[in-house]
Length: 444
Ligand SMILES: [Zn+2]
Ligand SMILES: [Zn+2]
View (cartoon, rainbow, N blue to C red):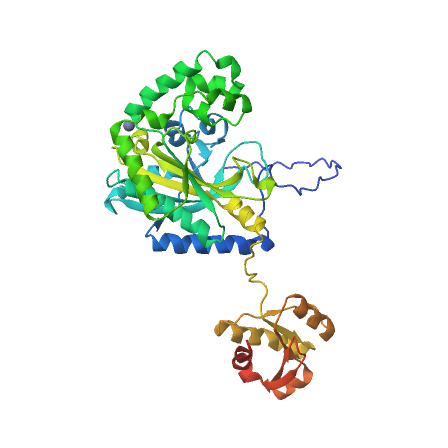
């Protein structure tokens, strides 16, 4: 085969290159200085998940659009907030906007029911929603989620998910979190309630916001949690779902609350909590942290940092045989925000306690081998190659908050020694190089 090589004559267009120094709107870098917060949260969530026996699962960042379209037909999330990705092969994919539907897809695909009844799964990862970015709300954000799938529709599982999430918040030292909880019934009782709601709202549409007028036709339950003042005023006379639950749903909800009572977990009933997705039934909850800082008071005097609920119909919506499920997730960015607002701190791993100072080329050469000795002993050590003067290096050690400096100069190279300097007192001591790790460890 003959390849035709075309010589393209690049027209040299002299154009000044724009400096690309802006991440996409609503998406953020997690810079080195922020990483200790993330590490802390990863560690705490893993410990909590391990303790309560949740197994880790990771699903792809993208899913077939249908996974979400089927599970949340008439929701804002599906109608307005999904990022579509068109592939060359013509697949309709989306960047996942939430974690539960993909997990249920994986549950069906791999027949995970055989691993456990119920099966407890957890995840940590990015989600994407196209919405107006606000403080603490991003288009790319991270969630930690816990799901209990299969088994029976036991109310104790609802409580277990809530407790797991609550303990995670507590472990991060975020105090006074409050669970808001509601039941949105099952297919049977919700249909009856929905009709009452439509009857109530149908001649009040002109008093509602535009979104709610649209929601009235597609998903009237969502009228209850609209944050628009006009809509809040109208809903005051609306029928309450708890008064309309069937006896099964009533008992289920009562039991969930009893389990929470048994743990003295603080909760309040919120009749207007309905959650943004179609697939929820019975228990729905959100967890708020109270904040004295008015800036943080976005929703009802607090910051919502976790939410979830029961989703017994989700598997069926995805085409599988019905299997009950309950789960919830936490927003990682919001957790970090809440921790910072409380003045909490996390240990900075970069602040190693030992700093290696070298003087001269010979010492510099041997420094790498010294660092290796510390690595083998699993003792952290930092250096600043490129800074040649003793004074500058000691200043660096100070800046990094090192407790001691190991000074390796020409004389020490020659004598196979190293100086250990206490950064606080300035006291120095010469020790054999072969014992550097051991001696440094003693002084930590
Ligand atoms: Zn019911
Ligand atoms: Zn509204």
